[in-house]
Length: 312
Image (cartoon, rainbow, N blue to C red):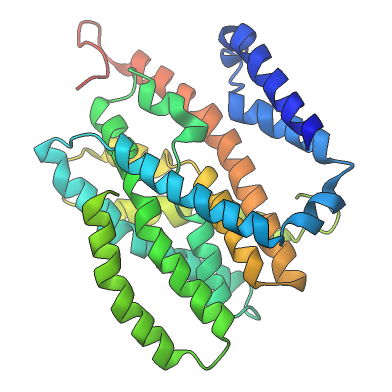
């Protein structure tokens, strides 16, 4: 653990020195940390797995989740009136639709899997997190409306997914006799979630090919299709709708939800959750870390001289 922390600190310090040079090669800090994490954990993966179900880790992750939701709420800025409807669609319709789409895709790939676990896994891979691709919301070459919408949506969707995730965990832990209890939990969850939002919003030899397909789907269709559907007839242009749908990276929120989910599963399900979230986060870091600057560069080239920056 001490070695890992020392290595991470060294990478961050080194990154502050060479950031300008390596970013031009589409290498981001999350990608660098992922590479270092794989190298450091290659020989100690079994020891790490042994501690993933430690009760202390579960309590720690719950605190991290609470802090993450609080931090997201504090970073949500004032929304322009013309974008309020877009955000309502993305958060209140797009997120549940993405959860449904994700559950269907997972059930199709794993027909033997319990529906409750399919739903929990969807809750793990759906939330967007701009931290791994913070350059997206800071890149002035991208339209300002797109950046503002992405940043605000990312701040809200963790809080929207959290109660659905906990409901799925309740069904998962309760086995088959959960219909009445689930209904009661849902009845209690809806007003509680409304109140909360109102206050402030291992890749290895045993890798399942279906997990790879699921990770690819999570980063692409599970996000893009629901977003395009809910943004039909909105004030955003088709270009901006595609950008909002595509630029939805996964990160800390997915990892936190996965660490909570594995406390309630074992055996093959345990390994599957770890594989899927690892693949999804790594794939997102690569795809979004590389594609965002390329998209920004293309938008800059296609913009006519004299039309100004992306702040519009």
